[in-house]
Length: 622
Image (cartoon, rainbow, N blue to C red):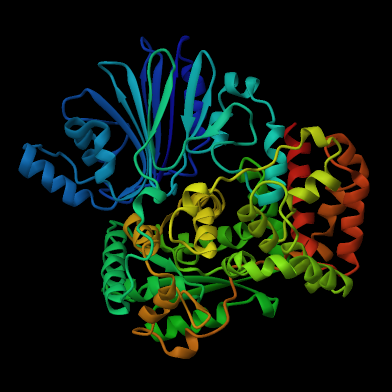
């Protein structure tokens, strides 16, 4: 895991600016860094290295292909690099001077050019400069685990692993403006989805795409993978076949992700996904597997006892950290600043702290990310199926009115899920209400001052309607395309890389992703039990009482914190003065939200939080 950056310009190269961009990525790669520049071509590539595979200096980047034509910088891991290396040796007589996956990328590009990316299994952000034809090639992994941000103007294209690196360039810093058109989407989802960022001329390079940048600064992108084209709904119906296939796919995915020249471990929450990954991994390590978990002093949010129990059954070397409110406050500023743009997922706080804990002993971590999206683990999927039922259309409105009339916080929240969706997509509506964010109708009708400035978030699922998928499965595909990629994987990447820790996600191996969306729905949800197939595999490793329990999820006691030690954030950033300075929202409506929250309507906590995050960011960055 590393950091990459690059520039291709029509004007003379500012080498000091390139060096500054590298400084913005040193936390991602503290072991080594390097810069390639060609002043005559006004091109630069830069790299900061976290040494994982082949620790020798010979594997440092930028890396040249054997024929010296191509220059490579690369962030991530190619898990099947040894297989590809052997193919290049046996079929194309390629000679290698290192044991690194970076060299495999360089030589694979010599042989297969852009088509090489279809052979790669892994997480990656790759940039290659062809010195002969003066063209830059970009590649991002299928699911979007590794980031590439880019800035584009008529005189310059620059790219980097993080926005902060781009902002180190004085020309970019001078030209960027706040992209107010994405703000309502942020309030609706809690993150800013690809391809947009909070800056009007900085973008996210799309996952599953390759791209080229030529001397005229034309950026051309093309998709090489998308989930919709790689699934066959309900193709797998047999329980026995499904179990065997998933067991084989998971074993292979975990084994590939255990390849490392440095110590590794797993994050273990005690839930199904992390327990299964840890269980499989523990069978392939000679020493007890190192596992790490985080808990909370608030009992209803604390899963650490389950993690301890799972670790005990698996015989792992387990470490845990119990997070206090005070520690959350201490790291809060770091979290909000480090993510570069508004980001409202508060689970970034414990993710940063468990990454800090793990980094004391290991450089690589395996996670359970992806299990919920692939195997129907979220409550939103149940809601999607309920709302798709024709009967729901008849009872939705009267039930909503009845629930609202109770005046009870829990029922009012359910009533909001039942609101008719007149703006945007039912998918984003269900997501926003499951996560306690604003609906698009609430934003337009009550929150924004200028309704003409409201830009709805749109999601077109017409292609999915032609497939034999349940509404819950379509909701899961929405999450895979947006929430997983633009929230969960962003959280894990930034939080772990802040401490120079590499996180790998076996369940997001693209073969498992394609398999999961080709399963019959009855193999994912059986007798009302979500993630049924994953749990069946887990029974080979753990007793039933650790498997058949209520899902907790990686939630954070934000409502409690906002009423106590984090109350200062509401006072500081949601005052009438600050709301007026930002100038986008009705202060009276925000004041009512705050009053209702403190009067006991807990479900409003994430609306308050997303407003705090946005106003804090706007005040500090406008």
